[in-house]
Amino acid sequence: MTEDKNTSFLSNLLNVSIEAAKPNFVALNENFPKSVKGRTIVIGAGKASGLMAKSFEDAANLYWSAEEFSRVEGRVITRYGHAISCERIKVTEAAHPVPDDMGEVGVQQILDLLKTLKSDDQVICLFSGGGSALMALPADGVTMEDKKSINKQLLASGATIHEMNCVRRHLSKIKGGGLLRYCGDAKVSTYLVSDVTGDDPSVIASGPTLPDSTTCKDALEVIDRFKIEISGKIRQKLLNGELETLKSGNPIFDRTSEPVILASSGDMLKAAEWYSRLKGVNPIILSSSIEGEAKEVGASMAKIALEMAKMRNDHAGPLLLLSGGETTVSGANSGRGGRNTEFLLSFANAVDGEPGVYAIAVDSDGIDGSEETAGGIYTPEMISEAKTLNLSLSNILKSHNSAVFFEKLGALIKSGPTRTNVNDFRAILLT
Image 1 (spheres, rainbow, N blue to C red):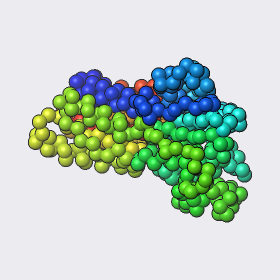
Image 2: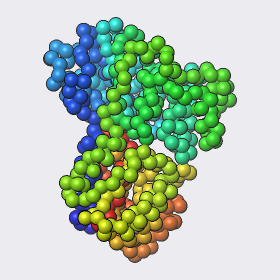
Image 3: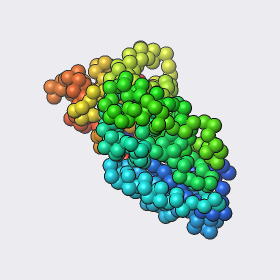
Image 4: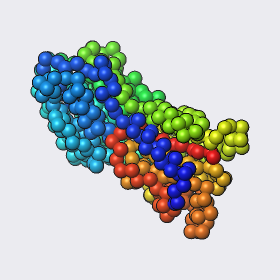
């Protein structure tokens, strides 16, 4: 793919937007947590938790005395390749999206640290998307192999993050508020980077410190609707409510403060809006919470783009259609590609080389599904290039090989881990 002013604009737009979606404790100013007489224990999990820990330390160094900072210690778990060096907080790595043994080790190390809590200590919790898999501690009667199997099935089912985390909460000792059982009498504060549509704090990382409004019955409904195979033992535990999570009104939540969302998809889109205006492009934010099958969303977005393209002469300058959220890919047991390249390939197939239509779609964490790429970029010239290479967009789409398509055309985006995670970022440019 040859870079021109349009693809350069989209690349720069992406960089600005990702930077705006990174956790920033310094920006909290007077709302930064106060130090306490005892220790400040920092724990957490998620693809952004390493950067969250570093950002917390930077702010603590700014707002607290050296003596207060010396009483900070902690441990967070992030995905392999996403760690960042911190001074007082240990950052470890584990597997995502399917848990591995290092995740179990990391959780046990966190629990061992919490066992040392005293009443004059405080706990700072840092959670982001990915925390569910990285902080896996099965409930009694549920094995780690059960968790891995159910997680794999959920990921391939097309279930939304809300539905997946409903199940995960009810199979865990520490999700759905369960982590508070290990925090003694210490004050607990929770800070989040949101990767869920609607930014519901209880869904992010499956809400380890927050009340859960869903029930065992809800979890079973998701399991049965998506035909997830579970053992008879787990089914019985769900049926009799033995795996129920903690609910609002439980006195255990009295020692917690309101959760703070440090970054979300909305922050990313607002930054894109600002940057595009600066460059003379007219932005329209369609939504920050679009869900659905990636290929269906791509086709629908293409229809919107083609309609808007007909009207672009009514506007002074190019148009930019912005959206966030999280799409899904069902039935992709083989093939190379994530939800963003699948969205983009479906979009390309429907737009079919319409002049002046460009698009970019990436996962904000820098990893699109299981691919070590963030997503891709589309230009109208790609349709003729694909024909030259005998690439059938529809056939590639059916086989879920979208990453192969953009790879052959040199249009994959390889950002590496961004150390934040606020879901997908899509921008359609109409010149």
